[in-house]
Length: 72
Image (cartoon, rainbow, N blue to C red; front, top):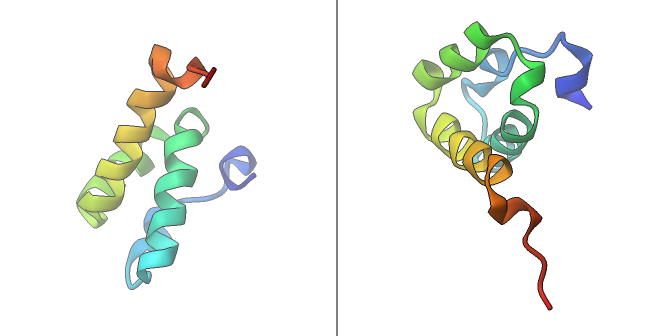
């Protein structure tokens, strides 16, 4: 939902965020990458490289065949 608003900049709240918030930010940015301004996503890399890395792993999973994998 935050990504869809188009008015959420993750770098504004990443500074000083606790571990739980950083995990949620990784999830939000990971699933909503196309909804964010590219400059905001790049700025996240400099603001918190671990959150950026976690989001980038999620981008790769969502874009791959693994995303549609079902357990039988």
